[in-house]
Image (cartoon, rainbow, N blue to C red; front, side, top):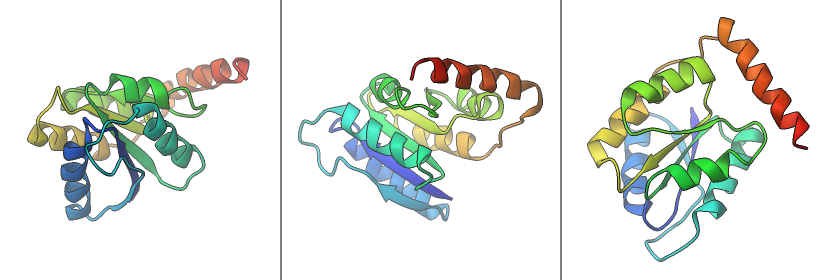
Amino acid sequence: MKIGVGSDHVGYALKLEIIEHLKELGHEVVDFGHYNNQRTDYPIYGEKVANAVVNKEVDCGILICGTGVGMSIAANKVNGIRAVVCSEPYSAMLSKQHNNTNILTLGARVVGTELAKMIVDSWLGVEYEAGRHDKRLEMIREIETKQK
């Protein structure tokens, strides 16, 4: 799988750990920045990764900031993105199975490295279940269409 990854300065160190973990699992990783721990603004990287996902340059994305919340908000402004911030594996798993999330956001100040890896593994390890969930995703797409 080809995964786009991005972070702000707070998430930079965790981003490096997650990139290494993804590569060890055999995934191709595209790093959209930030490339150091100097102060920057998270919406820049949330938008970059979200655009790469909707344009099918990558299969999905992982974004990291202090809490994961800012990245989630920024990414979700791009039509077609269903970004979820998760602090534990169960919600990550269900977000993919029920909501077909295409971006996972993590909080570097909220989760440690090993928990972050577990969350990523849970999210990547399941597929969208479709069926009864399709109607709800179509309703979300209709909301996006109204916003254009």
